[in-house]
Image 1 (tube, helix red, strand yellow):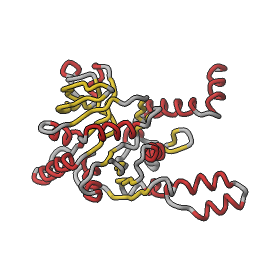
Image 2: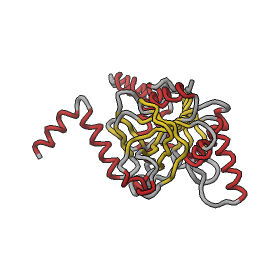
Image 3: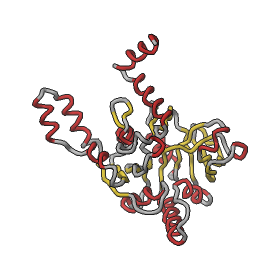
Image 4: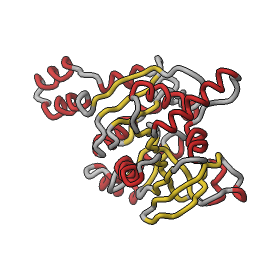
Length: 289
């Protein structure tokens, strides 16, 4: 069973500058919650309650958001705002959250390896905190089910237009197993459209096993011997898939990548329109304009 997860948040958020110069991109609001809180709630709703956040010294706001704040709770209760006090108290009890500072070569494989050394010899989930999924069944729950059915690493997949292949890692699909589950034998990073091995994109979500962690360890040793390039999780999955089962799960839902300005705005609009209180008013405003 997968009951632990890793969320890397140490990135600089350069695609959203100057908005993210002081404010971590993971703390940007989507509706009435920051992006990171949406991710943590998704994990909790999927039965994952031990979460490691790999961060950097410049992102203390992340820890402050989820830290207990007894003074604020007492002030709210004294003012008769018990509902708000409960909402503040809940943030520190959503899950068992631990924090690590990222240390090692550049690339998204490094925070995963940092956390794996603490988690130990068991599978865990990796989600990026700039992805928001709107789905009846949470993306994390879909990935968990795929891992439990296969006992092997799993990547979240979404259908893509082939002309967009150069923006994504594209899986080599060996067999379609039905139900959106596929056996894959590798990943091609950002291929030209005419060279794309499938019409699926690997997006933000993985179940990582000790075998994949071993590939990250090996990649990091190679980097220290010859410090060029970056250490990527997708490269480790590609190497692992050459000799071991790896699966992809097409996620049933809508994906918003909040890491770019336009997609962040789209996610904001989608969350606002879906809100039970604000949505109807905003639809009226749209009709009026």
